[in-house]
Image (cartoon, rainbow, N blue to C red):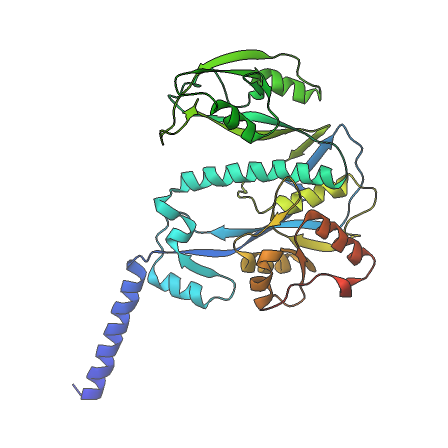
Length: 362
């Protein structure tokens, strides 16, 4: 066999072996890509995403789209060929598997965590929206979780409203631990609560609960051995003056908070926030209306532009990376708070786009 032919044959065989190895050998990476966008002012499967009852609402137009990112599942084994293709694809990002699923987190654990974050983001979105509209919202301290095997197990339950500890009124989460730790381990502490069932019924009727009861719990020593505890985690719940439901399945994480809040504001405001324009965005939101950064901003920009968005509300802390690779035709708007967002939308309505707070490259 001529040397040249032999060399070509050997090279071909090596290439085939490398391709086979690339397909068969798993690599510790996962992929992120643009996910679907959802108009918070619209419907999904014939059902409005935002449903408000007990308060006058107004017609809306345009789009206030939340954006998402698709990720490969925790148990998916990416091969080397897929990883290389993902690195070369402009709209996709290949990252270490542990970035998306740290500490060996399973798909079920990740989904549960995302669901909890999504639920909390909805609560904060409602609070931020009503505060933006100067509509009073009542905050209350509740039992968030009860530690299994702790002294509080069977005596306090998730959802119980904590009115006082040892007769001292509770106004903030920190008040609970402050009063409990005044006791020594082994001493009794008295909780005045509204049971979760009665609290839920009163909230549904938009009334103050009238049923309270006292629960005495003997404290124990903390794991660190330095203070008295009863084995609960306190949290903050809110009582709204009317009903706001967010109906959206198969979505997780906290990043839709800003867009949910703006959708609620739009439905409760006579004037359209968008004036018919297509606005998308992302960002976490807290009860005070502060907008926080999110992951996967590059993919969310692509998904928004592919859906037809003209403007994108961008958390300030994501601005630099967003500005580094902005899809053509998409205008980034920098936001720190929900108030920033509503003011920017007002500028868009008035055609004053040149004064919009923009994102810039470093």
